[in-house]
Image (tube, rainbow, N blue to C red; front, top):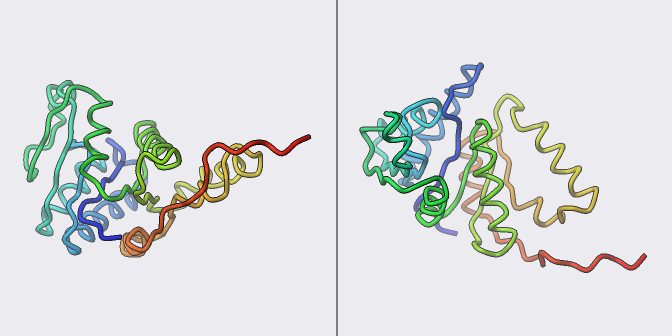
Amino acid sequence: MSLKAVCVFCGAKNGTDPVYRETAEALGRALAERGLTLVYGGGAVGLMGVVADAALAAGGEVVGIIPQSLKDAEVGHKGLTRLEVVDGMHARKARMSELSDAFIALPGGLGTLEELFEVWTWGQLGYHAKPLGLLEVNDFYAPLAQFLDHLVSQGFVTAPHRQMLQVRQSAPELLDALEHWKPTVAPRWQKDAPT
């Protein structure tokens, strides 16, 4: 799969450990060095601002998608290659998905998780065949990975759909994995085995 643009979901805060900021900077640089456009939520705060600034500083192209209400709250980044203003959060997520060939989640809060799970669900349902991954740092997502495995063991998620989510420890490794990812071929709806 040839990637041109990668959507990054991440926190509007920096978190408590400096390694989160360092990882966001490394991802921004890695995207720019590979000539990949960063697509993200358009904010200037938290890890959102960090990843955008790092990509820009490395000569990359950065496209932000932000709802008017957040732009009005003065959290919109003013130095991007392009900033698109949309009507709300649903339009923001749809536009980010439309512009992107892959998705990466850095550490973040409820919004980051919601964006990741929504785009994962879209892939599970066959609405897109784009890779997605977690950039794991400091075991941030380890408890989530354990819970996802629990969903599989309890029969609510199939193993192929669980494996759609690539997890790597460094930006170059994750970008390589997304480049080589093959879409999961598994029916979403399967009849339960007879009891």
